[in-house]
Length: 81
Image (cartoon, rainbow, N blue to C red; front, side, top):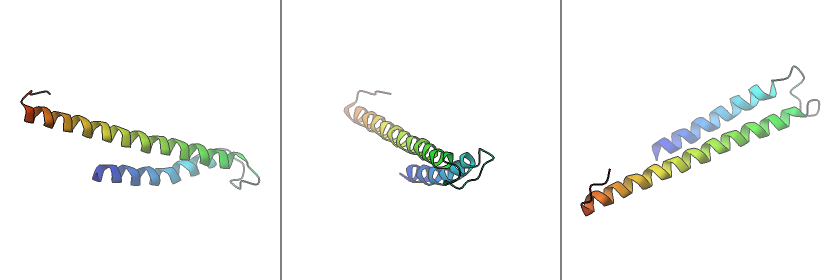
């Protein structure tokens, strides 16, 4: 669980950096009124971050499920690895 919280915090911290880098991608202003790509870039950065967070959580749940299955198999004496 500690790893999940750490990954969530890192993802949120990288979201701000990625969004600011994407917003500054063009040489134009970072004001959304002058440069409509600023909002789109923030949206895409948030979408990528959300996908990484959800994917990491799904991977975490899958690994936990496999570990529980191994423990149950060991208790039942099947010795599954």
